[in-house]
Image 1 (cartoon, helix red, strand yellow):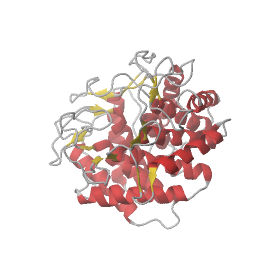
Image 2 (cartoon, one colour):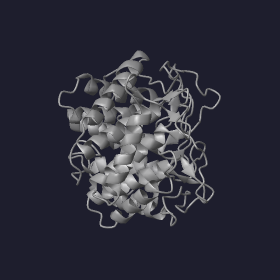
Image 3 (tube, one colour):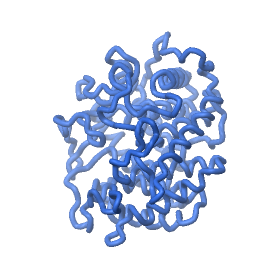
Image 4 (cartoon, one colour):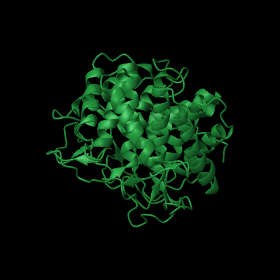
Length: 421
């Protein structure tokens, strides 16, 4: 499975009149501005960032979500560190909301969302949300923004004391409000984002124990569980980490816990494994090997497998597509994985796929105001799983990684290695 198939000889062409795909520099620079402009449009005057509609106006029917505020804050911190003169105010806006509106002052930790009156819509404390609080706080601290160090110290304590299970070398999924009952479920999605957050925390604090934790999670979920299932990464587990392969079979398009295996996470893991490899003093050799294998499995089993370009969202355990929607975030993670693998290996096959992915993005996903979040199986705009344009996190990171990729579309302002470097 580690042999990466080459894309078709005649991949999806770029739109008429667009620049030659190997030279994306100008286009990528424009994308950083467009995506950051979208983040500005999401600013909620009372604090945090709105969920946006397709026309980039606030969706006032949605509450204030912690994960959206975190992702927008993280993006703004990356923009600030890369020289955008107007991004600092966005970072500060996000840090303020995470330090007040979305934080539970009584028991500590963060709610998943609050309504317009500031009341929690769900009192559950989720690992997914806390991973993004840690990511946002780490990025804001590295950007030198006021209040970020205090926020970072707070979330580090909560994650270490409440979510990290040192005996299992893994993270708990969620708790009730007062931290007395933990959910009888474990998820690969929140664990993967904890790996991303742990890498950011290590970079912000210099504390290598966070990279050690990240390696333990990756060893279990990728090198053990994904490998055991022929690289079809299980997403859902019992509290003792027994895979639940039929979980949500009756809700296959659940936005956070879909049935089957999620193609985009294979690609996201491929990038994260190499980011982990880059910061470990003595990285195990399997990190690169598994990253290559996951990428190969994703393009073999997920790309254009139903007679249309693009990645299907999920597959079952016999590689049959389940949800055939094309998600923008999956394509963005494919770009990031191709960039990172090409940088690490120099193998031209990743450059070939990188160009195919960008050609697809420019033909189908990107319009004059940014990235459509979801397409149907015919690559037409859809909203089956995600409505509107909640955030710009995946797309912005794909653009920054592409701008840093000498020979692929850069060079750009990012240092080699990772979006958190």
